[in-house]
Length: 184
Image (cartoon, rainbow, N blue to C red; front, top):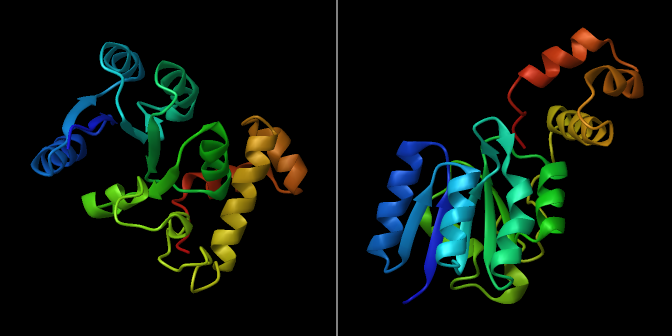
């Protein structure tokens, strides 16, 4: 296959499992636990594909996307996250990622995200429909969570400013932010 893949993931168990599965499928795969290690590995051997965790030890992995593309402009990057939101998905794609997937994800889904065994028009479909439109609409709780995330991003992470923009008490907003995102 001769394709190289770099996994940038701070969860050792998930990283090791993914690494084993990719090597079994013929990839020359390596794993990095931190942003600094990932940049060093990418400079040493520019990977064809990168699996990037959105949250690396409490900081955003999105900042790595431009750096990785600077090292290898042909690199294809898939962002993985345990806390998916439309805002971060849009940011990841704007920065140059080819796909954004919510964890847990299996290796076959991950490889499809890179475009394996899919037609170009089906790549955008995380839900599995050819049009890319989910088969069921988002729940009201999920829509609220997505809206809060968008406003929080617009306010550059400032909780007080976000609460004012949402016309919500700051403590109420903090409680909502501590909860896991609502299911679709």
